[in-house]
Length: 279
Image (cartoon, rainbow, N blue to C red; front, side, top):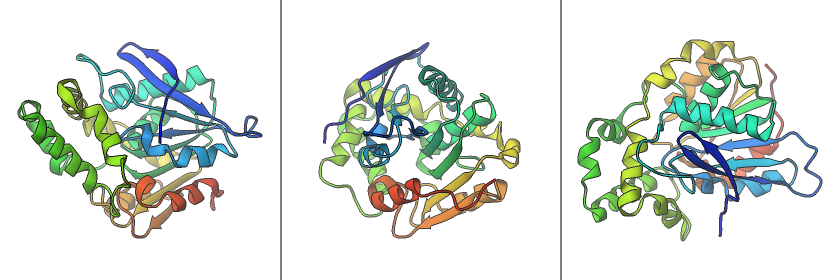
């Protein structure tokens, strides 16, 4: 399917592309904002956003340096910078207390924006999300420690590595054409540079800065996690649940890191259901 982000938001580091989806009769309902992670883009929400937009306005965007947003040398692509950009988007959209749904590093971005940037949410759903603890591990650590080596990979080796990394995130596999859509922003010399540029700036220190504040979150929080997530295994869900004890925790069986790909129906059903507990 064609996925387009028609609107632009200027930041000091470049242009962020975004879009608003709203079905007939949803315009006066509470909005929801969907926040993607790495190395993905808002294309992840192509099934989820239209389903939610039947009842509520939905805002989607590509982080700076990702997807359809601007990629160039010199960009600040740290979690702290993404959180500042997200706070700016919320202000630009004039959303005072939206529902926020966040995945992967989008979880850390949403948490920093809430806890350190001072924005207010109606409620927060995190799934298979970076939130805190010891998450600089595996291939991600190699990207951090050997960025210049990876930058010099031959194009075929770079693309093979990124494709394998993407496949590792799904338990059931991608539907036809989906892997190509996720690979597209990272192809070519500029895409390869952009891929390692963003990974080299994502640091655990940017989540450590708010960990002590997690227990003070008072809004409704829902945690969803794929049982077969090999990127952020279930212990990361338990770690987060221990620190936000009033949060709901729901396991999605037979799904990996990408619930949007492995279990879109279950994910949409969870997101359209009410919270079962209140903070």
